[in-house]
Image (cartoon, rainbow, N blue to C red; front, side):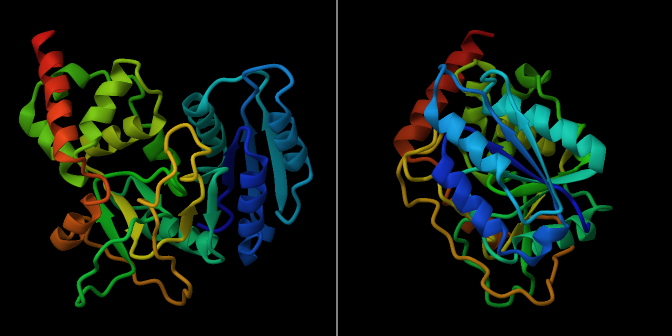
Length: 300
């Protein structure tokens, strides 16, 4: 979908934001793209990094338009994203979404726009820009694959999908009591149900796990590229959700001509097996998570 707007969510990492903007400007399509930047407010008065981010946003050039939205107070990443995506996507019908700690390749916008157009009238819930390292079978002929798990590191979706998300997860108790449903939800990583439990207990504030759960309930997968158009630059200890780790290093798509889109929206068994290795937890963590779930069930 040509001219789909890009949304950036920023807070207090000016160097990361500059790096993201510079990488976006290497995409030829950026001059025809509208950019919205939602900057969260400071937790404490006089936060120099938050003020520096505002200064950077006010000087962004190279896009068809730049619309800055500065929050008056700190509302947190999840609320910033839910509100910002809702506002923008309801104006434009679709949106490409980035956080300030990401770096994109020069083909990122081209790929995202083409994927939004190709999958618009299918049962796809969202488009991923990032992919972990996955083992692709030699006879696999496509540049994309489907997984029942969303991606929060450079992604896109459409208005009609976004507005179907149940942010309150109103059927959580029914779902979490069903062992088969929980196991099915965990098919793309056994960390998913635990994250959803933590969200519902108020231990984390995640828009992504709720988005992921709604996609699962609707049985609408996310489309991933076989090689990544996004690098996560926030796995350096600077973010609130990921520590300093090399776990999410990936292989980027350096050239892009004709994109061979897969039209089978069922996960490829071999690719899924490789994919979930990035997200599956250790045996010790699985035992802990099992105990947490058991405690929850005993209390309901």
